[in-house]
Image 1 (tube, rainbow, N blue to C red):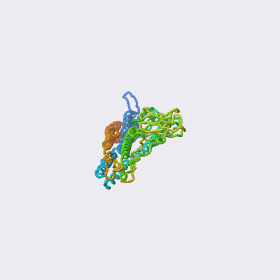
Image 2: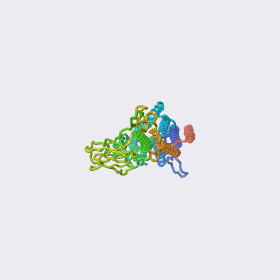
Image 3: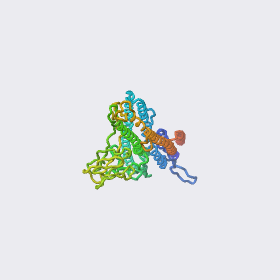
Image 4: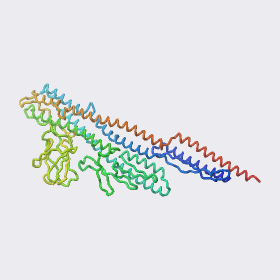
Length: 545
């Protein structure tokens, strides 16, 4: 009789526990970070007799968290790959939209300028036609300015997003280190890591992998994880977390670089090209490749256009016989001293020697203690000539400091940086247009204007005319944007597949849990009936006299 009560009691306890587990699954089943709990029911032992084995009832052997380390790792990798593409795509789409605007872009304004010049060429003395050319010059420079400044704005936006990504990474690693601490403490006390902390851990790992590619090593007993960068440097090790720092680059203060703080607190600059996964990698790819391409090409078009027009305009004469001056003005050449330089000197007085040889390239000018050298963006050695303190190479010359410079000092120089954002109309009135090719030509001569119209077909940017160069730029950016967008579609399919795989292994099936609830409810009711039967039997025995 006593064993019958124990059987009923153990069954009720197991049934109640099972309903609690099922209830937890149903309540949290809609949360994407929740892992299903599964209860394992075992025997409570029994008594072997001559008649056979009599069980003492059931017990809860364990409540397990449904979890698959491999599926979670695959999902994190998929998240990292998708986030890298997404971070790049969001920024690249803005350049593509800006450059490809068919009704309002540099190419449209450039063609309008040539049309206005063609109209003026038919009657060089026509005042309204001169005014139209003057206005077209202003509209064209404005289009360049707007495009250049928007690209500058995208660089600032990328820097802000890089800084925010670093903050998010540090926040996640700090939380993971704290969870490691709690897991170690609870596991030492109870022997089993709590499922809710493990859910928080995995959620943080997914969020961290969205920002940067990571490697994870898990202690299967305690649940503690160690997290490292792709190059092996730790981000989380036990209860310690290691920070990343975003700060202006020493070679270019307009760009934010990211450094890793090692255990000694020393900052180690991260090689941006080595990051291939996570939003941070996507932002670096956009800023260092897509944005650089767009800015350099647009600056090159603005620079070559202005230089060639100015060259030809100088060959002509205004209606009053005055020689033509510059049609366009360009920003001054500026060099940037590396912030780690020991000397205080800087490069100055940059001038254009031969505009046809000038490139939109980020050069590094270095002093080794005895002489100066120049390297291109690809690391090639650029031939230079020195005349006194003037350094000349690839169509430009610039003065180098004679003093206040130390061995190892470097300077960054892009000779036409900011040409698009800074180009302006130099002439101040329509009468300043030098349409004539002779001083005595007066208002009616259009000889120089005809020469300027021929610029439309000249191969000024590589083997392309100005409009062809712009079309090539639009096509390149458009192809890159299309390629990235296509890759995102594939990455999203892979991400959804990996998520569904994880959910199939550790997610909650609401229909299944509803069935389990009905089953364990019947299980509980059956054991209650067993208890009632035991009580009736006991009452019957008590009633015998």
